[in-house]
Length: 296
Image (tube, rainbow, N blue to C red):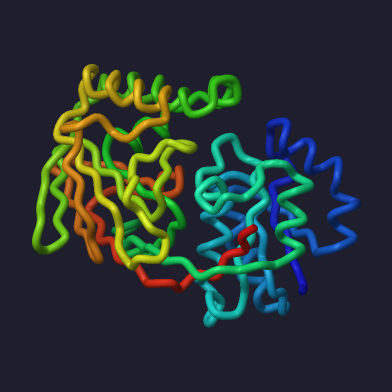
């Protein structure tokens, strides 16, 4: 099985440093492609498909994973021709945790070499960017409103020290701004709020089950609309994060969707897999069991 590993040589953090120390060992068993700029993993993934690799691996966090996923989707027939693999080197690694991948480098690499695969759903979102409609795939989750604004404000050093709780602090900072009113509809159910989260898997921000009913293979998206984003809502959700429990009762309106439309009353940021990609309006859809991924 031909494996191509795509990684950022300037990535910070202990996991990334440990990965670089093992480059010679890993490089003897695969091809290594280094990014040279932000967004560089996407064209490298498409190139790897044209070169005939059977597994394309994102070595990094959820942002790197999203770039590689979209590079695979960019190449005609890419989703059918290759498996997506993950070496979890980021701080949070939500998608890797969703798949049950080992977090240790050696064990994760063994999983990739063994090459066991499964098919999961593939969500996508279409939104306006630079005057044109842009399509973006995502593996785990998306968010609009306070969630995306918090991502803009996350402090990297704090994130390395306290992990997902850095997003709680960033959320507190984001509360200072004026919230947009977001309308969400799947065609039969509708809700309005200041924050909308869209899940493919169960987890958000680590191993926190914001979408406990989610199934990667059911052809549906999970939608949580938070009517209010204030200090009380944030504190209630912070308690959930600390205890790793489900969302508190009544804090959000939740439903499922095959397709979903989001509209904002004012410019509203949009993120997928922890990376901001633009602003609302946006339309979501999902392809059932379209993505081949390597699992334990």
